[in-house]
Image (tube, rainbow, N blue to C red; front, side, top):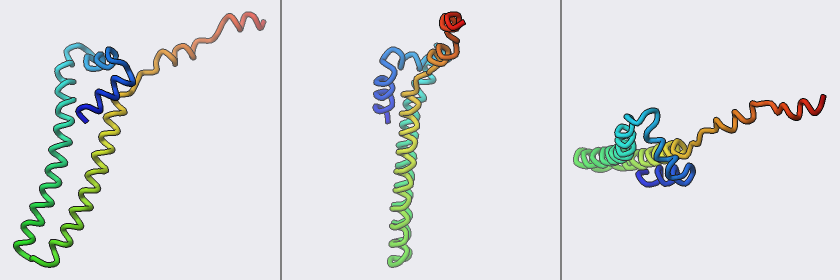
Length: 124
């Protein structure tokens, strides 16, 4: 995430255009946008670690209390939780990469909106 988002953003928009996105809407936002990039990756890592560690802790506690049936059930539940977390992580990574590669299409829309007056005069 920490490398993929800027890498895809630079590949799609170019180096200078991608760096300009950090200063939008004003130059004052530059430190906040940099902190946002770092904290996004850190938040995903902490979330994934916390969810995996909680499953291990629950299995450890249940092994000491009831050593036969509940640990098997909790292991299956832990696998399910891991699959859901992997799905969420991949969806969030896709959203972040898509946001980094987004290129504004305003110039193309303005050009298409203007009528061609030369062809209109030639037809009449």
